[in-house]
Image (cartoon, rainbow, N blue to C red; front, side, top):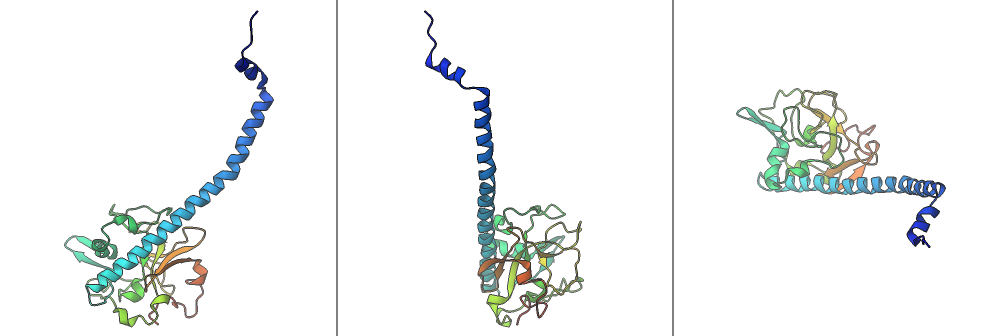
Length: 228
């Protein structure tokens, strides 16, 4: 007499309806868990982004220790190469990954293929750089003593170009004060995570804020950018 094994009985008992029920349960669990995983990933990227921008702020402090407490330039020309602010800070961190913000949609390179930064520097007030580039070869950084309220003066924010298809690329590393007009190579704050912008301040503390809390419709207009 031929005996049916327990495994065969189980296989026969596992009907199509039961299989569909199992698949439906898996689909429901996936629909519940995937957003949780996505939010956890975004939170981790936000934490890393805040760490990166704070390290940029600390690099600026180290740079200033060597320059009599003067903020670094926006950029300067060295032969055929343009040395940008993040290039000047790089020796103080030796890790170009902190120039970037995890989760940013921006490229890690500029229009020329050179490594760039996803963060913008408050060049409008922490240097005397002019938006028309007229003093690019002769501008200076301001001294730390000129910043009256470091905890309320922006140093860096996550940023994106203010002009689509800018000839400089999609980054916004030359951060525009709110009062300045859009322009090629200049950027505005980019709310990368949870509709919030990642910032570090002149005293090097880092946090996140919606644009409406520090950039849009402020009184005075450059309230968190100027030196007062």
